[in-house]
Length: 104
Image (cartoon, rainbow, N blue to C red; front, side):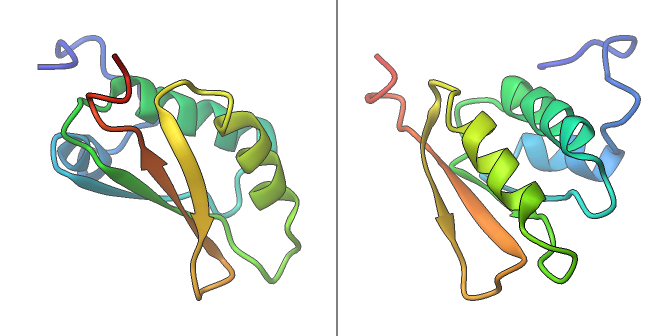
């Protein structure tokens, strides 16, 4: 298990925690500041096991693209991430993780 009972960060919901143990994850970052969104996303990425293949980020679109741009710049610095792709929905992006072989 990734977390002990006392180690679960308080801002990760039970739904997100369950999804961390699955192959795909969706994270809604609406209404968060850029700093809080990056902190939240980094914590989730750090605690994802190797079976997670991608994370769909809901960053919103109608209030501007600052959150999307800031997240893309900061999160791409993580060595586990292959790339971030846009979706047909302008308010979402998908983080694609490297495979286990690519991380070796």
